[in-house]
Image 1: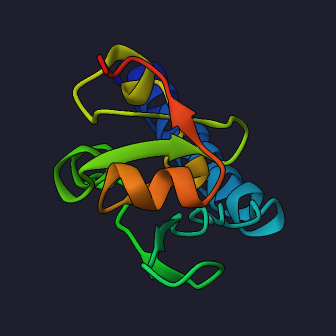
Image 2: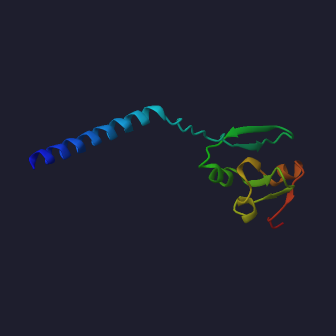
Image 3: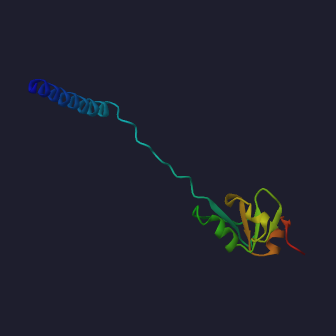
Length: 121
């Protein structure tokens, strides 16, 4: 009777050792390729100076793009449009940061060919 229990115990231990070694060998053979994460490029904001045609590219962090867009600009325009807006205007908030053009004054925006959008004259 005890002999039968010892044989069963030794069999269970051997099966456990074989499974453990098999798992180690399988892990060494099937090494997964590492996951590589790439970050997108940092968008830039275009600021138009008072001289016609001069533009300056300034890098912006991705998190503060929309905050800087509305807080630094007195008037906001889009590269894809010919209208300028107040930064608090709903239209101005929908302009993507990479398409944002900032103006220091109404005159500066109008010199560049922009017309008033949501601004009351």
